[in-house]
Length: 154
Image 1 (tube, one colour):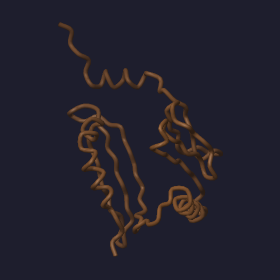
Image 2 (cartoon, helix red, strand yellow):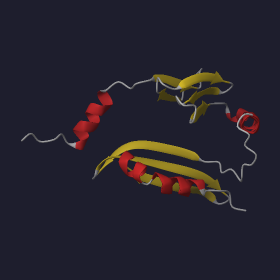
Image 3 (cartoon, helix red, strand yellow):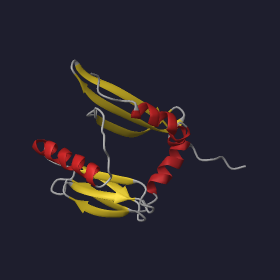
Image 4 (cartoon, helix red, strand yellow):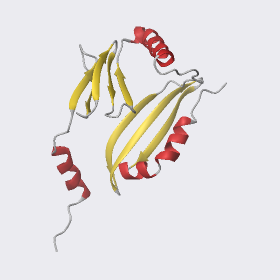
């Protein structure tokens, strides 16, 4: 009987398989972020980066970059686009946050850890989400409800 590979060996092998898709970077002059969009998604340039739409046009992903002094203009353009294109009529108390995602390995094997930093009057609030891809998929509805419930305090 052959011993199955350890999670570390399996993860290493998976990382050696080329990604199916094309890499995109922002900002164009001095890239800070590079990610891969599947070949089946439609990608187009927009004012501050690019947008991608799934094959069925049912999921959209935007990646944008601007110098700090341009954030207000970029956000205003996005708000306008939500109202005009998507007919979004209400956005309640948006919370500004920074998210840090890490692919990691814990005692149970490959895992994902994300830290979401939210400025507060007294400092910073940190939310941590920790779990493997499988575990997070299993609890996706609950995770969505938790993150969807985040709002600015009055």
